[in-house]
Every structure is written in C-alpha cells, then in structure tokens.
Length: 493
Image (cartoon, rainbow, N blue to C red; front, side):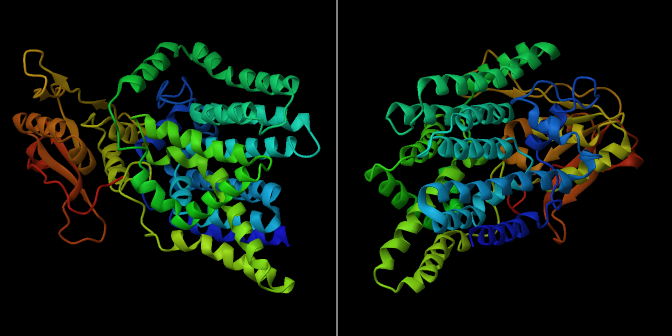
C-alpha cells in the first residue's frame, strides 16, 4: 500500500513540475552555475563564483546544455522529486506509513518546493542531499544501531556541501540534537562520520588551489560578510504562504507531539528546520530559494501531525474507516497550497527570466560587444553567447569621493569605441534606477539608437522588458534612442 501511494504522489508532483520548463530563459544564477562547471579550459567558463562547482559540473555533462533549458531544468526537477520520496520515507520512520504518505503529499503539493525545484539552482541538489543524509541518520540511530548508515550520513552531508556550502547548517542542527541527547551516536561512530564529511568537503579547497581560485573565493566570502540586506527577513513574507499554512500548522502539531513525548528524532527534525530558518532570519542576506533544505524535515513533521490527527479521530470511527480518516488528514495538508496562487512571487529565484534569452539570441546573431547595467544580465548573455565572438562587459558604478555619502553621485564607465550593444532591462531599472539611468545618459551622449526591443509575448502595447541600443553603428541599422519607461507588467525574474 505505501509504495503504491508514494508512487501516485510522485506522478502527481512530477506532472506539475515538468509543465512548461523551457517557457522562460535561464536566470543569472542558473547561468553562473552552469558556466562555472564548464572548467577553466572552456571559453565560457565563469571562473570561481559564489558556490562550489559540483552542480555545474554535472549539468555541463548534458549535451548542448546551453540551448536546452528544459532539459537542464528537467534534471533539477528529478533531483527535487527524489526529496519527495525521501520525505515520505523519513516520516514513515517516525510516524508510520500514513504519516509517510502525508509527508509526501505535503511536499508534493507545496508551491514553494515546486517553484525552486523547477530552476537549475544549487539549492536543489543541496536540499536533496541534506534530506538523504537525515534519512540515513534516522535509520542509523533507530532501535537497532547501524554505524555504517551514520557514517554514510556524514558522507552525504559532505556531498551536499559540495553543492552549496550552507549544508553545514544541517551539520550544526545534528550536533545540537546529539548534544541534547536526541541522537544515540557513540563518539567513535560520530568521529568517523565527521571524518567522512571533512574529507569530502576538502575536495573544494583542493579544486580552488588547482584552478588558482583561492583569492576569488576569499573575496566572495568577504563580500558576503559586508554586503547590505537583500530582501527582508529570509523572504518569509513570500516563502511561508507558498509553503502552505496547512503544512505549517500540521508541522507545529507534529513537532510538539514528538518533543513533548520525548520520542526519538523529534528534536533532530525540529532543529533541522529551526537552525537554517533562524540563521536566514538573522543574516541580512536572504533569498527565496534559501529555505529549501528545511522543506523535507518540515514535511516529515507535518506527516507526524497529520498522523496524530488521524490517530486521535480513530477512537470515534470504526477501524475500517481509518484509511478514510487518514486520507482526510492528508487532504487537509494540501488545502493551504491548493489555495495559493499558481504564479510564483515576483522575486529572484522563484522563476525564469522573460525576454533576456530572446534578446541574447539576437545579440549573438549581431556579433557585437555587449554592455549591461547588471551583472546577472551579463552572465545570461555570456552563457547564450558561448562559442561566438560576442564579448560581454558590465558597466562599473563609481562614487565620487568629494560628495555627501548620503547622496552619492553615480556614473558608469565610458562606453568602448566602435559599434557596441547596450542592454537595458526592466528588472535592473526597477532595482537600481540610478545606475541604469546613468547608462542611458551615456547612450544618449554617444548618439545610441534603439536596435531591438523585447516585450511580454502576446501583450499588445506592452511596455518593454528589454531594449538593446546600438552605439557607433550606421543610422540605417537602428532608430533614434529613446528612454524606455519601467514596465507595469510585473518584474521579470
């Protein structure tokens, strides 16, 4: 019964996640992860950027990956679907088969999980790796100790960290659970598991030394420590509704039941949710996908809560009605997500980017150097221009030292001589209007003209999402420059 139910849930989850994967182009983060995995010998290599390169290395194995967004995202969807199975198995370990089915339903129906796992983001394999490690740890510390599974959990967390370094937050949660006596792991087994974790994670600094990227990686860490806030407290205002209030309520019930009863692994699951959530709430840098690793333990707790509700109702119905009662509890978990809008919120990391892919395709045909107002646009253009003579530059924003710091004067670097394409995009105009306006001033001063415009498809009279200006080209090639107005169609992502 349990395998059949899990398979049905998996089919329903996959149907939703696979629909329309290639409708929108790759985001800046997706472009960076893919090009980072190409390697130093590839002309499109992004260099040492942000996170470890394991995910990009795996994606680079896909034939013609750059031109096959739907295939790349299909890989991410499959990896995300593995976590749906793991959520069911994890909840079954602590709440029985009906709790496992409920957990799988909670994750499969969760809009937040569907949003993020439809994108080629490092959070997807990292979260699945963390989920597998938690499952191995729970099974390894059950009634019959299995030290090998505990060691495998340490190795699994090491692999998850090679996808994204924030997997170490789960390591912190595990150590705290062990410290409060919620994990029956002897010190020798724990030491071996830690040794596996350290040995695997050490592959990343070894790779940095091999490619000469230690300084770049250290610079990225310094930048992360001093950069300003980016989107509120962990995007909780957009993430929590997409998780679903039914799932959150059931998870609270499950967590209270497990911890109050002193049942094994209750504290582990609760800490696996609370530690990352607390970290991202306290850290000023936040992003929509960052809480993905909490969704599996959260769904497992929701499965416990649903199972508890079903068990409580069992006394009021006959034994033969128990499956119906459990099905009712499972359906209740999906009520919150089902009532949530099908459209992801307009924040980075929640969906693909409209119009930029199409503009990049046009730029590749024109064989012009490219200047953009935002690094992420340059990353996307560089990805699609891989193997072509198009070079991508990013304008530099500078602040004059002799002005009031409260009102800095921004300007952009001078445009290169000769024909050059300057890309204006609606997202950068809405998030950094000062730099974007300064870039347009440079275009006007250089006599730039509009050469290409991308708007929302199928919308008559829509304001532009991407405008390409050409500077230094013959007049016949383009029309006079105009300053586009910010669109009112919602921000591209």
